[in-house]
Image (cartoon, rainbow, N blue to C red; front, side, top):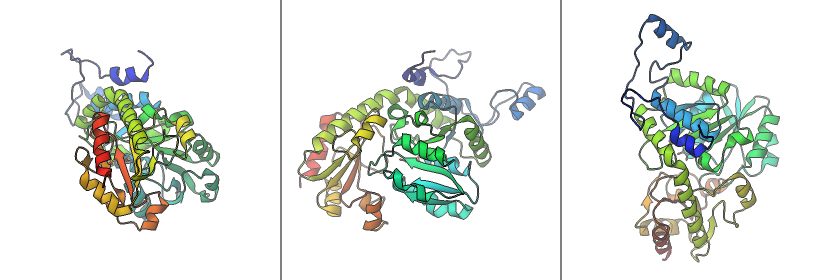
Length: 388
Ligand SMILES: *Cc1c(COP(=O)(O)O)cnc(C)c1O
């Protein structure tokens, strides 16, 4: 088989059945049957390879995992029902009460809730650090620190973390490096190349890419993924076979979709950076991005997300949303349809203006998840909504 990742994402497939189907079939079955007692005992114990029960594994989830392992360069994986199930299991499957996590402050909203509201109930504490100030991370490390948890680029402020330095830092202090790679996908950035131990994805975003299903995956070193798999098998966050089947099909087009998401986003960011209504346009591959050199080094393409800061704060943000026609007002991202959001009046409205500022969210900040529509149609809609 070819070594190219694009080909592997298309050609990795469940073994063909007697029906000689070209496209992988969907295995909507909760359990699997055995020929005899010996086979049953062997498959239950894991001595004979084969599926037993779909909470453990299923041909469709196996195919999805195998493709994702090729794309990320990971040894093993476990597919989950959502991105948050993956993030949760990647932590709880490895850590125990009394352990401590060093985490970059600008994390996905529910990951922040997990660290601050849920994990402390189980005796797992954390300390936040600023993603772009690695030189100051040392003081956050404690004798019981076990994991460094990061997202790069961050949502929605598009701050980058230097994966090379983060990995060196983590391993110097004996921490597992856990990277949420949802924003970049393995097409743009592969954390395993820098030595990441664990990678999580919300497959709900670019991996599905069409806003249809929830899903997630944990990838990484074999021994760690085995521990997490044990946790998942006995707690039940498994991905459904139907969603795995859809997500595996979606991987066949991930690479070409990411090319278009990124080229549309690059063009839109360039156009908006010249708009008189915009105080700031943030896009990793725009030369004005404060970490442009790192973005060029670490990210093959600039990604599909653009962040704008409107002149005029909260009111300008809500007025912008009300004038949007073609694009969607929605909470999702990574869809074929362009989506605009205004965090200060929605996802982050419960935080104070100071708390928002500490994670890089100003009141006029707009996040655009640039879709696959024609770039001129996307740009016209955004530009007319900026005109007051
Ligand atoms: C959406 C998202 C998640 C959570 O994924 P779900 O599939 O919604 O559970 C986690 N991390 C990041 C960066 C995300 O964007």
